[in-house]
Length: 279
Image (cartoon, rainbow, N blue to C red; front, side, top):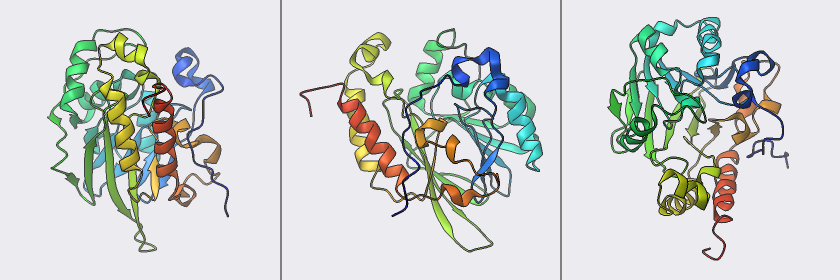
């Protein structure tokens, strides 16, 4: 049996988010993760995903302000025009995933989506400077789990998955490789960071304990969905960085039908450990 390479990998070394004043030490070249999807976050921590719909570009998250010039350059280097970004879909409101929104929107006029629940949090925390400053941005539309978002070849299903924040959102879509005729089920969970669901963290942020228990339940349920390619909002969520192929166009490395299940179960079990005696 082939060794499982994609799992939730604890961070043992300093990453980009911890050393924003040393971005040159944390750069990662863009690489393809599905037939029409590329990882373009350009750092060893926070991800940005570019989807080529055929009728315009879609971004899942925008990453950190400090890496935005590399994100834009990556789009050009892959043969696309950043001004063709039509949609920006945000997994949650935290600045490390959203600090490119304002600048990108001013450049291309993209329509920005966020959950209604996290827009409330965005407005509450928009002036915070810790853990990082959040550049102001406007949300154009809210996700509706009953109304998929469609553009070109993609129809993206969203699901509210509270926990890391009250309005975290997961994304599900199919992507077909025209050369082989294969269709892959692709997914990304908008926020798997467990530390924000510790009892003391929930209390500090004014969130109910129920948030953690909803997260656990959702992870167990979502883990049963068939997902061929699990996109990672942080590279450690899938142990991605050690598995980036030399050929940055070889997405088949990331076809692993166990990864989504295993990562979600790991995160659910981690959060359960914060509440001994309740499970």
